[in-house]
Length: 165
Image (cartoon, rainbow, N blue to C red; front, side, top):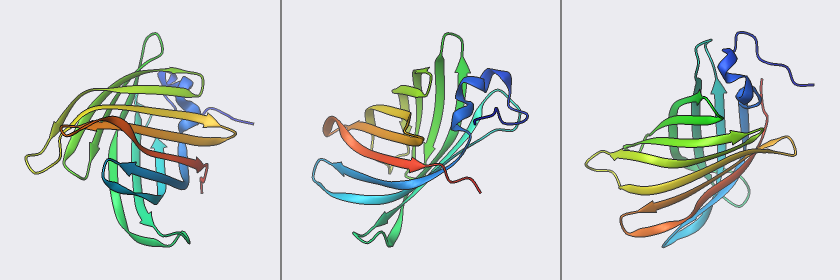
């Protein structure tokens, strides 16, 4: 049985199912990059204010699931607005910060990149879409990305069982 986390701001009740730690594996590919597998951890937390704290980190793994090296991480904030609208801010350790806007319906969240900033040494992401959903009790994540040199295409996807504790 699911219960609303204690102290959660009432605006966040529709996203209460996200709160916690999710860990699993995913796959990635992009343009000329060889397909790869990664371990993925996503944490949604709150401090009683009307936003979720978001943290995601990953590691490149081999075919046995052994970690080869750290991969990108991101941190941000998720804000619920009227009419099932989400505003999401995400900063990546690769020098990119993005604003996302989207909608949620039950345990399905769709986001599109509104605008982004790239540090002078970072790649420029020109477009993106993200999908989060609860599928058979696990967090499903998919990220499509476009850069200055490549059109919008599938980039990352993962399935993460809840791993609180």
